[in-house]
Image 1: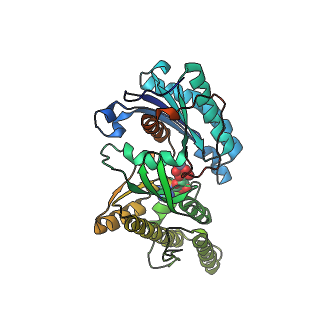
Image 2: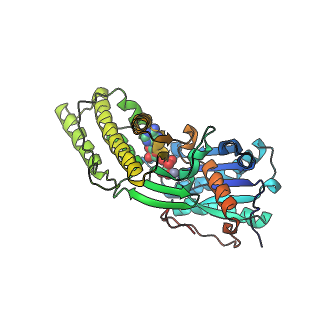
Image 3: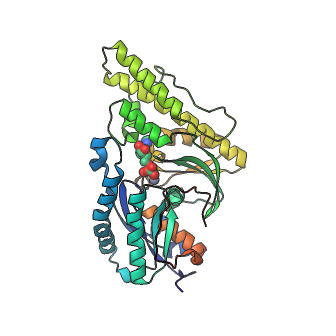
Length: 363
Ligand code: KG4
Ligand code: ZN
């Protein structure tokens, strides 16, 4: 029977292929054992982003994504092994993203992980992509985060507030009823003629915008629950884009675009901050952890920082480069779960993926 080693130092290889980034990393649990920040256990990582390939299509093309993962994954694993002066035989367990995500893309990571585990006779564990994001703030060098906490998960595909009681113990407090926050950023970017993925571009453009030109709606801010909705905000942006363009012979000047970007960012940030603060108050918890691609957003970080310090809450983020998809968060989540429960490691070599998978439905 193959089980992960407990109470000993473990070295875990993590593989992420759920969308348009191929990520590989190796974490070692030695620093955790010594009571040091978990981030010090990140021995090495490599990432290949497919953004340039998908840019012409304005979004991720699933079939191209899967094929590219196949091309990148083995060279990336070799690169990380080389950089960490490691050998495959030093790997104690393998963690891979099992879902949610694009089915074909997930299958690449799953088949490589299971194949390697079979060949090496090592335990392998499928990880929920959002759990990777959720635990990634603990990878910060100075992370001093105690369970339980509230997590705001804001990525391209998800927007959720979660109560996190411990590793593997997650309950959903609220989530988006339609578009995800990252999706709203990406769609706004498209309407403003910015390229995919638009989050960072919209954020930068907003800095030059006038905050008083557009007052967009703050959807569901006063709904009394912790759910979100961004489809209406997107429609308001579209309406304004058309209106401003119509008044200027169909042309949107850079400053007009910046004003719209500013109005959009102010609206979405205000809702995200207000719901996060409500979630902390309702649960009685005092720690907020922010994860997912939109967690890299400067305006969100600034506003959350102000509101949390006013209310006496602490707020934590992953290191900037680990906000968007990466292998480190998967290796890390795998190591944390295996340390907690070695029996989780799979002993069957068949592989399945879960393109749709609620985070409160873990084994
Ligand atoms: O977590 P992630 O890499 O992928 C998913 O799991 O979906 O998140 C990607 C999303 C994209 O929608 C991207 O536009 C958004 O995160 N994003 C940002 C920023 N950086 C990435 N949105 C706003 N501001 C940013 N700085
Ligand atoms: Zn993600």
